Image (cartoon, rainbow, N blue to C red):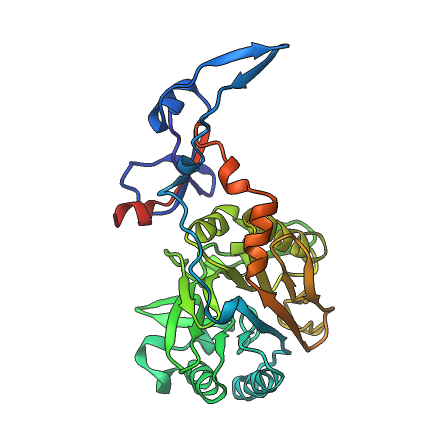
Length: 358
């Protein structure tokens, strides 16, 4: 049988075939094999069951994976990750972020990434106060207006971290992507909300104030095809796998890991998402403020498609710059051809929204 399920706190729920989220379909039986391809003979060798040729790797991604598009300018450029300090003064945060972006652009960066919640303190009490209605226009969203203006002025692509967004009576944790003309190209609403309880360490529930997003965010830009996730989204490999299957070159994760999970998981997860999918991963955290109610781990990082750290930092305010070269993606996929080695006869990642649009 084919199992389709999603996690709901305390419940594993079977879903109808028409369910419109992106799900992982896993098959481990002969009957499941026959659904994806014709049955293959098997034989025993020294007690080990061996599968004959015909693993059907193209069936391991449903629909089949797309190749990344040909990147502009040969896929070589500089990325800047801006680990900025955040205060309780929104106007000051906006002005400071602008100056940091301008400085990064002046150093040659063509893609600039900001942190999660860069315009306000990270707290449930702050989100409603600092929230902006992005869809209502730039007069209602000074943070977005600044990003648009500086992107156009400096001719850079900006993955604008995230800010609290107010829309139709809901609050979201939202990242806006602007092209070098200052146009809003995409808006990612954090899909997986940060609800955790580690006794004696940290308890936080974004769902007390925020609503989860319900879509992938993939955008073609002057610096290639970008996928966007926000912080807790990085813990879900299915999301990154779907992005890779849709041909992204790089996933940008604005985030604010904390002092409990940061030391153990932050770098590990970035490397895992990069290596699993043989793509670039960039993360951007706020600088650490030990007087804040929520203390960020920092350590913003850029990781290459072989898991190599291209640039990183500690917890202080700084901007790191790395050279990106998308030919490394093809090189690593040629060295280690994972895509052609997948077992479509045993498992498949189902991109339901893409499947439904066919």
